[in-house]
Length: 408
Image (cartoon, rainbow, N blue to C red; front, side, top):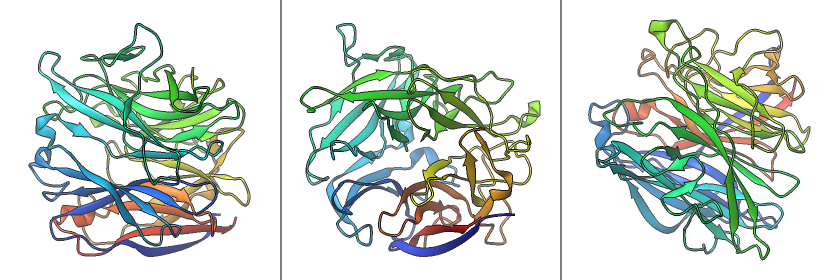
């Protein structure tokens, strides 16, 4: 029996002009005392997905602030440009996190350049800190591991310019009781996205601690999580939930291979030491031992503040698929935090297939931001309903879904 939920679809941003689409990512509160919020908006020009020349798409990135719990948003700072992909010069949106201990807001973003010598897209990560609830920000500082052997080029163990790339988009965060801040990233083969070919990927979690005067963060890195080719085309796009102490649990996108008979999955892993090391990945399953069927797409954990239960949001399907679509239905399910599996009877649809297109161009509930509303306790989800983009225009308001779990 599924959960009893209440779902409201409400406007979030007004409809943009024709031939433009919006994503809103990485929403978070930026104050421990008020309901001020941050969010990252991505305006996608040149029609976005579904066109032959998607490598020419330009993203325009903007950080926004809200003073009234997300009811209204104000642009903050200058708009940044990313792309087109053909140039190799890319920038991710701000990944935002509020440290509940200090009250400081943290934003992380990545910048990539194309190296002809390495035939690779090379990424460096940068961090900004706000000590006044998101009003002003420190100058971006590159994330570099402490020690003389690390510099702007060789900035983390195992991360050397021309060898690897880290994707800093929609990074999930957690804060441990010992003060460590953990965030997860995709760790790519250097040739990723070159000539529209995607290569093996892994997942890695960066760990940060405040220095003595809390003026900056000191960073290190955990082990890279990988899977063999027999499981799928690498793992990427992790989610993350803190289970108390040093225990962290993640699931990771893993695209299948139809020719080899491998369906897409979410591979999951547990860390008992705050993200330094991880157990061997395994497919995410239900409590009856059956597999969880998903496309290769993102997912997210959120904890319900009233009950403390952990819910998982994803495109949960009733049969296996081998690629990245369909990205409907959009559903939630409760995580059994002891057995580390989904409770099958709890799978509940938030939004289903909505139009008469075939699955290649049907509504895709994808690339969503997410948070828990402090005032109402609702889960707030901001998926891009991508059929607007595939039609090459977006005529409706960009909406969010407000979800409340009423009972089981």
